[in-house]
Length: 511
View 1 (cartoon, rainbow, N blue to C red):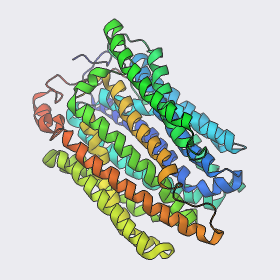
View 2 (view 1 turned 45 degrees about the vertical axis):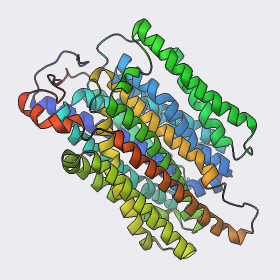
View 3 (view 1 turned 135 degrees about the vertical axis):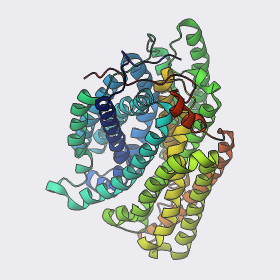
View 4 (view 1 turned 180 degrees about the vertical axis):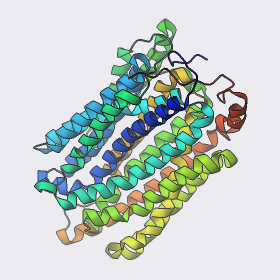
């Protein structure tokens, strides 16, 4: 295996500090992206009221971001491999910050949707570089610790987003209503851009690659053809052309596979590195990531709608209610990678799916028993159980998927991981039209509408349980233990990277 880091130098304490500073910067960017996803959900009622947006437009504010994110992630990962991960990270965080400003100053729902799509596209340039920078900077026996930190960041992002969104919406700073939930990204993004220039080291693929423009077009077209009619279907009463378009999207993906095989044979510069799917852990993990994204896409949107439209809660009350969930995710994510997975391997992830499903079933029971009288403290138990289950999955799953991936393909691999999860998330958001809005009778009396939202919430949770059952079964295809946990201790002792190779040394620091 060859490595992409330029001019290797022996590690020094100063160099070691620099790489941990770099880790903090890219983790902050990942945190900003996670917060931006969860912060929007809690402000949906305020956005709907202030802008006059329809439920369809509200769905696009969330799904448009996920769609652009999913469509651009593979390209973003490959651009990092070709032009440099630091360079693409800085372009992404700069564009994300600009798009956040446009969201904050949007004058109508259409501008907000367009700005969110741009924001998702810029996130697609930024986020794949996070995992690939980690993969290029840290040797295999240290990555478990780093991915554990990543899992904790996911949990903190989950807790900070709803709380921050609730507080900013309730405070109505300068009479701006919901707009500060986007404008808060500006100082964070600018700081990340300045510090990233100084501390992040550049890395790229070891051989010259070209951007596969035909592959970019096919990936983007295929995703749009599948997801667009799914998201718009309910609004348009599920027209025939929607089904035809989704079927055509599958044909496009088939054409993509055939073209990428030809492209690989021709010049070795495909957009999607198909050889990655020969790695069993990667192929199985991709399937799990996709389905897991569907469950998250369904739950988080309908949960917000349930609390604020069904139960009539304020954004702050709804945001505080999610604290037990997010704390449980953060704690379980840290424990899973550092303590549990090295000992129990795949069983930890499967246990996480079962624990999360148990929490959802508890939630269904409580929602059915207490109806509109369900109190925040009563939600604490099912949310804590759900959060613990999610934490047991989210961090070790990333670790397992990347454990056997060659370093020169880390950008493509991380792009694919994020793509399929966001694709699953967008599919889940699209399914909200079926499992949630499809159950609501919008013609009933206004007094009956909260009950309609409560019934729709319970119906959606049954779908989440079904998806988690599928995830549990798919996890049997994951390796019993990620290789770096099997060999990591020996690697640290004998100077290899856990894959039987010499570890990457600290790259020459560039700014």
